[in-house]
Image (cartoon, rainbow, N blue to C red; front, side):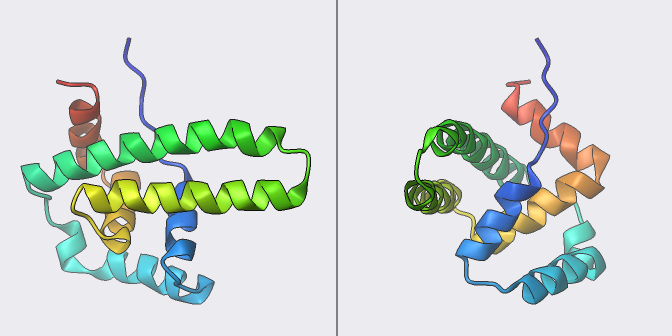
Length: 127
């Protein structure tokens, strides 16, 4: 069964926050990515594959931790779990040879470029 992939803004924001970028800098990074000609160019096959696998892993981590965070009875426990989730997401991205900034740029490209989205979904769905 075909399931369209939806990139969660929370994931991108969480990874930006964990990378130590302020909200203003994150907004500037988004704006730069939209203006950056390199961000508009097609990604090579290896980059698409790395991003697709990282995206799938990040979404899996997000899913697992969302349940844990929602069932936490104390805010402190939820905060600890949220930090653990962010750390795991960053590790998943880096394990695929991407930096957090590269991942975020590709996530933004996926939202803005339907053709790129199809490429990523094809990798995720094994096509």
